[in-house]
Each structure stands twice: as structure tokens, then as C-alpha cells.
Image 1 (cartoon, rainbow, N blue to C red):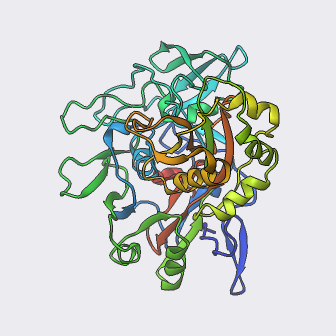
Image 2 (image 1 turned 30 degrees about the vertical axis):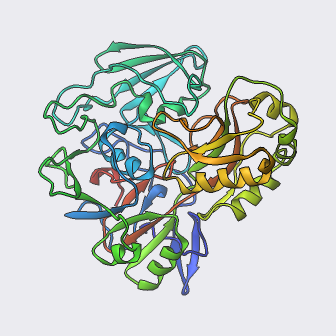
Image 3 (image 1 turned 180 degrees about the vertical axis):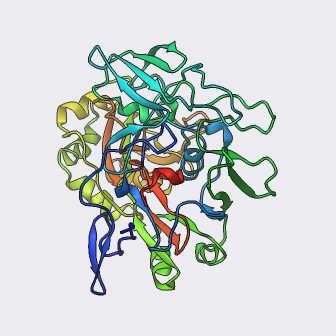
Length: 447
């Protein structure tokens, strides 16, 4: 039976009894992906396939997707907001992928191994791996994942070596117990290749490429292989329009954390909604150098020892669906080690512009901890810092699927998730472990 959207009251992948009928939101046990017939890519885990209803198919003509954030080509391949991640997921690939049940599966790589406890990793690449212009995969400059703190890359890269035309070895500065960090496309040394056509887009190895002839205001993605029956994907900015109007005017997919919009969609009858995985963890990242914990921060340190304050932040400060972030057990000692000697006097807790959840958390922390110190919440500048005032810490987000960052650089606050609204009869999607949707190849989805 195809995957159906869970009712809002369930808010999870599982099963539910609706109007006397059992709706299967996901199979009960994970499946090991098998190769796709005629391809060297893996089958999709059926537990991660999302459909609006039983009439949803794989493939189709055109799917129209509404975006709430801007998309900058310069952010490829990993993306800095949810809209960029959704678009880039169709064009660029990581070396490995984390599915919605936490299984590591192949993406650009079909297998991987380490012989020195995670200090170096060797990836065997797919035989069919090509860029969208047909040129072969090539490991180039390895940027690694940018950190919200300068000089605090959790897994610095020492070297990259092309072992053969179909394998690459990556040596890390510190060992990683699993290859989870390679689920980030920024850790794929050949994820992007400079575009020669002059349209500003980097080439990727994913199944889609941007359409240079798309009309103004539309980001259109076309299948790289015209023999594969993939739908055209058309992305449009919702802008300042009422999201309900955007949904009613031909939108097939919308990802949102707005509970009012979910209620509206559920009442229309033409849509199904599904809770996506818990995918984003918000952290209080503090700035080095490490020094003594100021007396004014003692209440915060005490409150963060357990999950009570984090639960209060999730309940009172965040508008999206959220919960206390799991993670390290915070103690007075590691808070003292982690926190900077925050400026007594003027200073800011920064947040990324446009991230309302990060802004709400930063403002709440300022109100709780330091009203007497005249701190304030402020948006980050273009360089990740505020040019107008000294900063004492940042509220940032990372994928909940990411490997742990080094203890002592961050304090986990809350975890959030979004919901997908799909028009009934529109094509099926696959949800990855970080909550991002991806259009599957037809042969990769079991009938």
C-alpha cells in the first residue's frame, strides 16, 4: 500500500486509524536499499516515500513548488536556508545520504570504508557518475563545511586523493567514527563543477539541471536524462503573498512550519499534510577565547544542566513545532569551558537574518539572562558577525542529522521540524534524514 500522509493528530511517521481505515504512513521496519534495475544507484527506502494519496505516482509532467526563502546560486551545493536545500537537493549530491530512518545509503558513492578508525575514508563512486553536461566526476578543491564560528570547523580536512577514476580518499584532521559528515554535500570534493555557459549555476551530478530559458520569476529544473520520466520542477517565491492564496493557485508542494497554514490545508480537501523528521537543532554557539564564566550567566548555566529550560524555550519562544533539543548533558564545568568571557556592558547575541526561530531564541535568551548588561539580539552581518556591536554568542541551526560538534563550542537549545503540504494526485517524493524532500528516480521507488 502506498505511503499516505499522517493526520495532524499523529504528527509522525507511523500508522493511524482514520475513519475506520488504517492509513500506512510508513512500513514498520527499515529496508536495505537495493540497486535500481538498469542503474547503479540504490532503491529508495519505502518508509521514506511520501504521497498525498493513493493516486500519487512517480514521475509526471510539472510540479509547482512554493518557496518562502530566497535562493542564491552562490550557496551551492549545501544551501543556507530551507529553500536552497530543497532546490539544491535535486541538482547536487553528497557522497552518502542519510534516509528518514537514519540508515546511511549511497549517493555519489556506492560504498565506503575506513582502515584507520575513521581518520581517512575511501569512497567507491558510482560508475554512472557524471555532471549534467556529461563530463566525468572530478575531485577538486575541498572546501569542507563552513562553521558559524571562524576557525571552528568540527572536522577539518587534511587532504583529498583521487585513488582512481572511480574512487576518492578523504583524510580528516580528527577521526570520525561514522561517515555521517559526508551526508553534507560540502564534504563531497566533486559535488560542484564550474558552469561554462555563463548562467551562474554550478554543474552537479544529481538528476536535475536548471533551465536557462525559464521565464522571469520562475526557477525551473529539467531532468538531465531526457529518457527518464521525471517531472519538470517549477519553484516560485511566495514573497509577501498570503500563503493560503499561494496554496490555492496551483501549488503542488509547500513546506511550512506555520500551524495556521496546516489547518487551512487540512480543511480544503485537496491536500494532504505530513510531519517531516525532526531536522533542525538550534544551538547557542559561544565565541572563543575561553575564559571565566561571568556571574550574570550563572542562572543560564544552572538552567541548562537539564532539559527543563530547553523545554520552556520550545514551548514559549518558538512558533514552529519544536521540542527540547537532545544532546550533551550540560554541566556547570563544560558551560564554563564553553562560554566566552562575555562583555560586561554592550554586546549582542547574534542570529542569521531571516531565521525567525533563531531570532526568537536570541531575544528570549537576552531577556532571561542579561537585561542588566544591556545586551541585545542582533542579526549577523554579511561576514557572519555584527559590525555595529561586539558579539558574545550566536544562535544558529544545524541539521539534526549532522555528527556532533566538539563539546565546548555549543549549547543545544531546541529541535524543530516542518510539514509538507502536497496536492492530492501530485507525484511522490522521498524525505531524507534532514527533512529535505527529493524527487526520486522512477525505477528507485518500488511499485
